[in-house]
Length: 55
Ligand SMILES: [Zn+2]
Image 1: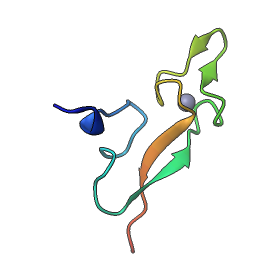
Image 2: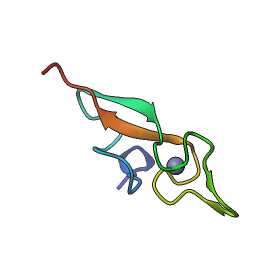
Image 3: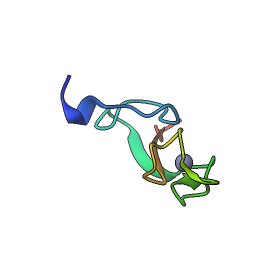
Image 4: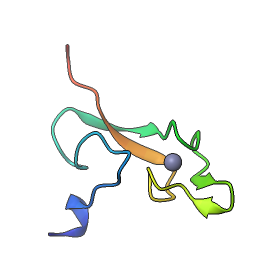
């Protein structure tokens, strides 16, 4: 597995997958932190990979 395949729990699909885009993490509101800890859903980036699609 390469770094580009890495997926955070809050990601809806793996980064680089078709019809996905970066979105603000709803869990931490893009801050990347949840209280004293890095947000577990986005891995502390504040961004998640969301499926955007066409439908
Ligand atoms: Zn987050």
